[in-house]
Length: 401
Image 1 (cartoon, one colour):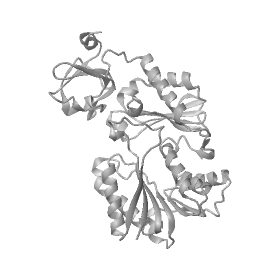
Image 2: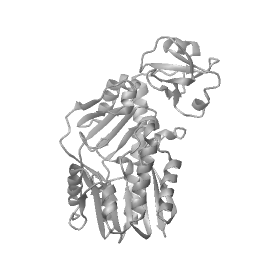
Image 3: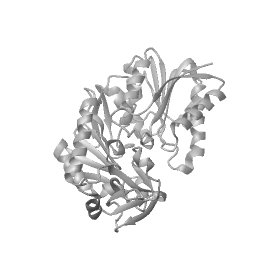
């Protein structure tokens, strides 16, 4: 099929001279400032072809002039047809990968991770017999019914629940949509297993889609480091890090969580796995306040806060927040203690986060050995050329005087 035939099928975005380099490197986004002109009259969410200023085809993707990211690449094959078969192949490929990388004894994982699986704006998580999905782009919104139909046919879940909400969606000109989409509505709580540990989660109102699935590999690491340790788990949410620490042989684990509902779920999760909340207390408190007021020191402290920077304008303020919480944590570590610290803010990149934590360590008058950089598990793949997709970053540190 000739490029001319492709151009007659889809509207065409023509780039300014020499603005194709990022696409050629594999990055899937084109920003509005790189576009010279648009042929045809594509609507937000339509499929469009993209070409160099000289007319060489570069691929097909989602077009949305309402967003700063005006084009999101789907395929470099300019002759492709973006149809039901295209999406079925993409979804089957994602499901095949998960069969290889999700361990036995785990009934919850991410099945589709947006650009990381070649489906920009689509996230699908599995919680036992239920799926939870979120759409964040106008293009994927157009494909919603096709995606739901394929998921139902390929997986046959008891139900599919939608959690399409947030700033990314609003920036695409979309309104929030939350509720059952296919099959049965989920119960108030759903039980899952992760590495043979039991957790109860709230699909409809829990953070993200109900559970921090991206931390599974990091929880496994925490388990290996917990033997005979005293552990403080800040921002504990459903207590998953705490359960892994206890199974790993921790002498005492304190979980700090400000939400009463999340704290109660954490308590139930400890009990469900045979662990005593009396021996491993769950404290309802703001983590900053707890660290300022406690006099206890710990062998290991885990910091997994919510995203402090939810927009670019929040970076300076959130940087101070990350420094503050890490400074307090470092001051409550025993000599040679382990700090496991995370940021899930898209606008705080790895280099900045490392500088923030280093500044906190130095202000505490201590030094830190970097043992490992941390990120999401393999069921959250990212495009190697798309660092923006790797939102979760973490540091495993040994802190010394």
